[in-house]
Image 1 (spheres, rainbow, N blue to C red):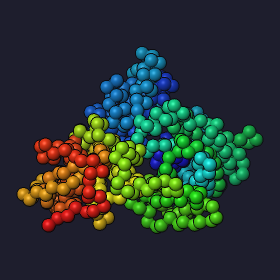
Image 2 (image 1 turned 180 degrees about the vertical axis):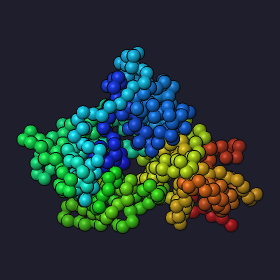
Image 3 (image 1 turned 90 degrees about the vertical axis):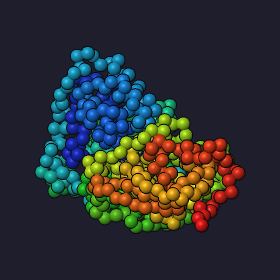
Image 4 (image 1 turned 120 degrees about the vertical axis):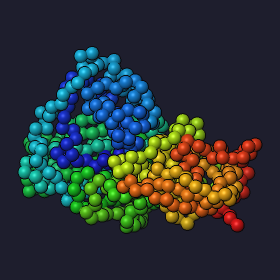
Length: 522
């Protein structure tokens, strides 16, 4: 939804090494397949190692595919497309590459530096002194403005700066978004990008042009001359673009990819729409959590501004803002939601629905500490989805989401108890349970139209891990035990229906009388 919406802040190829090589002997169609694979892998939060484990290949194989050293097998492509929920986008790109590629190019290939990138010396280093980003909404159009004060702390001049513009109308439902952008791709004309450097118009060079995202180099030059950023110098760059609401989505993310001294965010929304805005932060060392400081709300006439800032944000931290417009919409916090709409609403939010094969598969465990960052990304996605679900529905009994419910087959789940405590479960398994069994009605976000009477032990003992690989054993009781057991079942490919007594069937939401009340225990 912005240049950083896919957890990506514009960065120099110097600081990251990205975008500075091309592959000889590899066709344009194969290059397009590689870009598509990387895109969906990033969106789903899979590292190369995690994807390899999920589809039954080695990390080395995935690396070779993404560097163009080998054209992948059909089996790999189909499994990756399913696992990454790419809506057949990978299969189509692979088929095009297979048709175009010549037999002579299917072996090993080499890489070489791009001639254009010789202008950007490897000793250059940028610091963002201040990034200020604004998002405004009017008459069905979102407008993004980004201003960055860049300082060249290196020894060579900087001549270009890489940015990305990406959109996702239906976060958590990649197939639906992919279908939307395939039928109505994001175009350069509608974006209407304008970029300047200290008031000078900037030219640009396109790197990737995809249906839902664009990557381009902003050049420190135009038809009238060049204005490189020399060592020790500071300059402001600014760019503006627009995207229609039909192709936008209800979230906006900034990610720290180069050292940044200050980040400030402003949202400008119509007061008449009664907007609600909240923020989530993730980092390399912590799971997703609410912003450490509140977002200020300022009403000025018919506009409402939401303002937030942070000094010295951590490298690789991500700051995600989400919102909803409440005016003119029936409350979705009513537990008596229409039965026909309940599961549809969860699907729109990004919850995988009953019938998807991933809900019957055993989730893959994390190999800690090597996959610590993978786990953090997965947990961040779960928490973000949980925030959206919490905005749509009140859960007096607490709630939980397992990674398979957002399309990720990894052994991670997050539980939010009735008193608001958040529990993160990585590689959990029940190792002991009490003899005492209790029956209560449960609901599941993956088939939310019904409630089922499920017998569960009053107490369970769970072995789980942290991202450093340390093993912990925790005892959960009563309602929390029920929530935790429900999510561990998801990681084992089980739905609560399999726990119900023979002959007992779920009832509709309309028949259920426990709405808005916590489970009771004697």
